[in-house]
Length: 232
Image (spheres, rainbow, N blue to C red):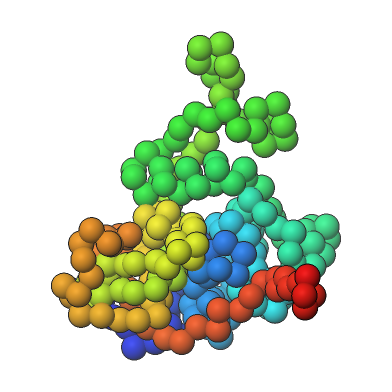
């Protein structure tokens, strides 16, 4: 039951070329930065990443873009990365844009074993192209598929050796959904605690969804620092 690995490099060692990887985080908040760095060092390629966004040019998933390790992105927001823009416009990167709520529900559905669901988001837009539609109570809905990744990478505040996780404030974001949606989920934590230390009522992701745990130090970079002038 002890799921702790010695390092992020060891935890991601069997992620192969061409894998579908789900990553938690929002912007640079709550991203699995240790596992992302370990994947860069491994040099694994042709990856499909499912993540709300793709980091920035020199941090987060952006470093895998720079090293040309990502072949396809499934995301809802991609506006903070110039290399992403360059690769997309140059037809070097496949991109599937998904409404943010739809992306969240596709991950939740995949983790819950629901193969597909209907949603009104995207009806009448390019998002609907090639998708089945159906009317319910006079309104048109799109059929969207649940997402299940070969692996999922998440970042938590605390975790125990079984893999029970607690996220801190807004760093929770997509992480619980991503954790559910991976066949093998790797959780990196800031603090490792003994089993029984976390109040069961405070567990955000139960251990049943987590197969590997890594503990380490995180940079926690601020994506966009906004300050006001003194005296303002």
